Length: 258
Image (cartoon, rainbow, N blue to C red; front, side):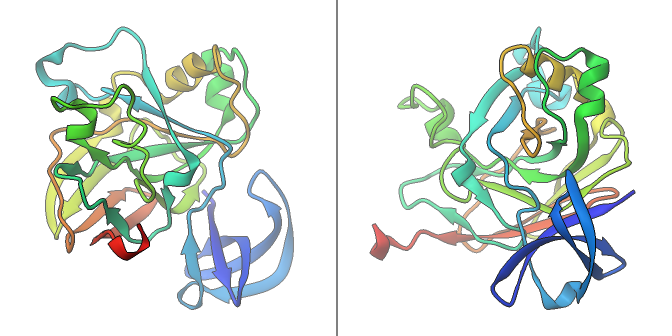
């Protein structure tokens, strides 16, 4: 198991390997690198989103507990999130001034390490480099309300609506991890990824039949149970065993920048 992080130190951005709070900087990316002699304490750097993807795919309705009585999908239901929605660990989630129903969606995120196109399930499984935590922020009125948009471009794609981190972890089974979400310290979502409707390899294989997936691209895999609305001042934590905690505070939009 290896923990890769992306961080800022002294104005520089780099990738490193986290070993018990000591970062060993690497030359390159987690998908191809050389080791260096540069080291930092984890406490001395600012963690960034641990990957810089060319695209973000996301799977909806992938837990029975979230689908409820809507019926299980026949195939992975996939949508896009823009790369501009990514947010760092500990970075603020900006609550748009006209949003009225902004929900958390704690999710496991797959990080792809190989170029895949029309991959078999076995090929897709081998292309999953590692996993991290994600929060697929969703404004429910823009997504499903009476005046909903044609697509989910802002419901799930506003700036900061995609926190990811704190690390990419390799060598663990993505289909058997406990996922827990806390809102202001209260557990509001808790389920194992063993309860996926479609497992990780199926998601990657299906998507690759239509979209070429590149190293560094990420796939949000769906959220369990029932989500809740959040307001400025709330803190949301997504914890996945073996990975860590993705923590973000919700803040009000600064209308002076509008």
